[in-house]
Length: 406
Image (cartoon, one colour):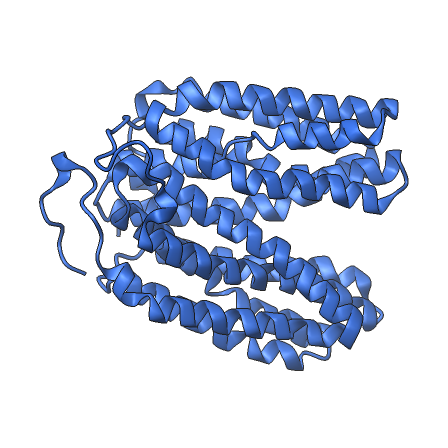
């Protein structure tokens, strides 16, 4: 039996841009926690570290889609080069400001400018789409990207904190900045796989967020992102309450492991079921599997229920990005993908806040009620949006031939 992953990497340039993209996206996980690890050591104030990190993360969440919109109009090289340069300089300024104990406003200003960091996962997915447009191999490529995202979130945060603690406070942020600069440069040097710029048939003023499928999927993944963050916060709180705080990293790793494995398996399959139904099933599984989390009263049971809860996360992401590729005009593809990733990020931020409040107010085990509520909301969003997800618009005049019905 042929290995579908081997087949996608036989495409010219695929290995190169996938490798460059992996290293360039590590700062997504490294930077937010790296800022906290750096400033908490250099300034000794967690509120300041958290506020600066939040300034970067939330600003980037809303800036990234606009940057990607420019990429759709002008191309990756034309836009990524200047914006990445701004982000790298701002990160370096933030590092120097922390090291030299500059005024607090310089920390916030640097974090604000560093939010110019583009969404590298969206750029890489756009390259896969350029190669395997409307072909079964694209599902495998998206599965690989989801697995890569999982690895980034698992390893990136740990690497950033580990370097800051083991070497010096700025080590994690410095490594993150170097990876962003080198990884993005390596990606942009590979011009042969850069997506072509396609004219927007509805005029230059339209945004991908005005597309109904983008709205539905982004909203649904805000709730899914909240589940992801709640699992992390609640795992830390519960293991600490059980007197085994060191088990938190194991539980969180198991959560990501389940998603990683299923995502790899799904990518090797060529399912014929319409993508919008696949998404509904995946989100339904996520919603149902949040319920057992409420009854996890030992570390072993917590690890098992978290593992089961994570099984459908990667399939959800794979089908969500697949729908974006099929339902959004090509001239808006990169922006559309970025909005979905922004939804995940916003959901994680809101979920962490909500879960933290619930844990502080009602106790560690009640944090998972945020997961149950979010899972239900995600499922209802996808279920009510089935009609909107089943019909896409033509990507451009040159692609006006009707696609197979799903």
